[in-house]
Every structure is written in C-alpha cells, then in structure tokens.
Length: 66
Image (cartoon, rainbow, N blue to C red; front, top):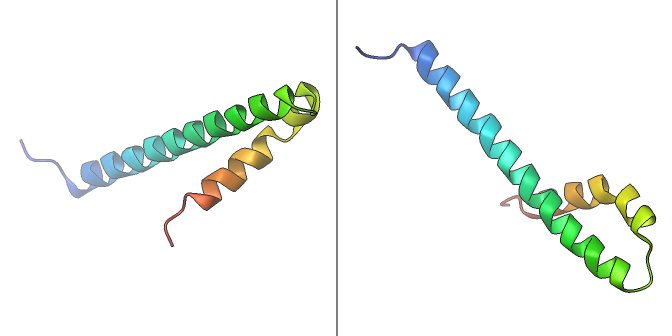
C-alpha cells in the first residue's frame, strides 16, 4: 500500500522536529561543557546556569550553515 502525500508530509515534519530537538540537545551539551570549564575557573555554577539557554542559542546559531 502506497503512502499518501499527507502521510509523507507528516513524516517529513516529524523528522524535521526530531532533527531540531537533536540539534538543540547537542547545543545544550556543548554549553554545559563550557560551563564546566568556566566553573573550574572563576565563575560560579549558579551564574553560569543562568546563561545556559543563551549559550545554547549562540552555539546553535553558530552551527547554522551560511
């Protein structure tokens, strides 16, 4: 049985969402690594965790292909 155009569109949409979630998870993981390094220096964990989302946003933006 062949798939309809709607089924293909739904599958493509789901794949795109999963890819975006994967990219975000990787950006957050990279940000946590940066935070670990900062905390080992002079920063505090609390102050760095406040910036976690910002760091992840910046990393995710930097990874975009131009």
